[in-house]
Image (cartoon, rainbow, N blue to C red; front, top):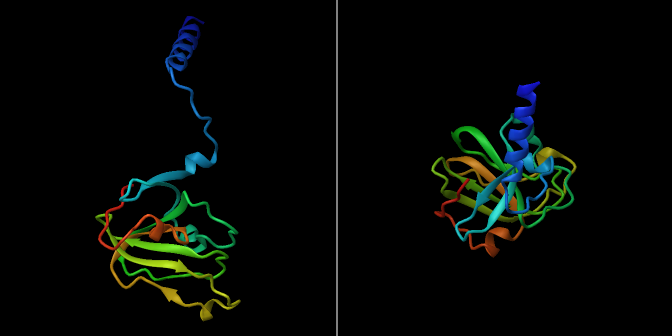
Length: 153
């Protein structure tokens, strides 16, 4: 009983120590990671590393906020062309090497209009990368992102 009372006092004291108001976290917040662009702009991105998640990516989504995105983490450096099969919105696709340097950018990448996956063109993947960042179309240009820039995450 004494241990329980001590624990409650400790937790209450710990929670009361904050002098600034806290933003209430949502379930979505636990699945996001911050990516900082060279100009200081921060995107909140979903991180995909499991093959099934990487394959699904941005499929079936109808929108993407300018401050959001998706970061794909491949198991090892390699050539990773991307396609837009069943992706409904245009995207900027950014390939990043293991040093977090931008190696390639496909701006304003259009959705694939075909119902057949084999008819969809592939984009990028001609330079070695470890990560791929997808963000709303036009964000790479708006943030003046260029090949050779360093991304932080």
